[in-house]
Length: 264
Ligand code: SAM
Image (tube, rainbow, N blue to C red; front, side, top):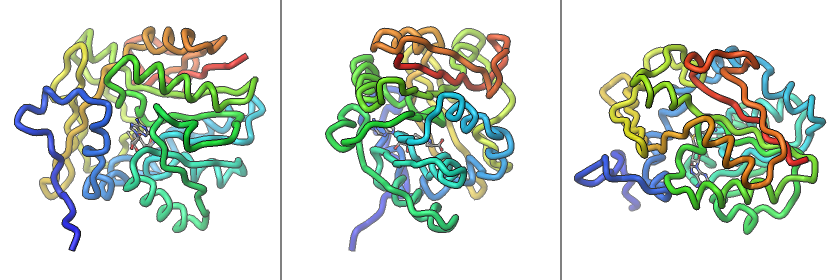
């Protein structure tokens, strides 16, 4: 019988774990099962509205690659809205959950298990848009991995394609040691998500669920201007940054930034 791990393994010194490959050990079955309590699909759909769909439509995008499918929220939303979607993720547990969630919503996901750093080894098609949402890019702890992943996203886009990539507002956390208050992504009512440790190369967040279920994620705290610079450096011509689904924002306020990077 295969034994399933119910606790994440961060070893004896969790603050030392700053490894791009570690996402596989973080998204274990028991955490993945809780993920939808954390993100609460209905609450999220309400706060996002049709922000992403409008962006895609403005750019004439119909064929979309969701590279951070997770449990499938955006893939399912986009399929429902009539987009053609391929759903990729490096973590097989997440992909299986996404497939199950889509089935419950009467949709069949076209899934590909692929690590971003070698995306084009497994994805052999071109897309109008790549989406990397839900603060996923933060899982890359090494600058080479970030460059490699962005180059792979760039390569799978058609000549006029766009990348939509979001990130938590780490500037506010790093500069003021505060976590912005509003919760657009993590909307679950009984779930507490908070930073437990923050330094220049690590943001360790704690996720607490009813019944004393506690999980962590060790992430790289991306600064907004740094991400924008990387996007330009891999070849994107124009990068527009939104705050919490709005174009006008004051730097310290938003919880999330959403970058739209245009290839031409
Ligand atoms: N987009 C989903 C959402 O908003 O609910 C999931 C977000 S979750 C924070 C991050 C996802 O990125 C996980 O499903 C994880 O497996 C995936 N991921 C992290 N690093 C990855 C990598 N190097 N290659 C492929 N997928 C990765």
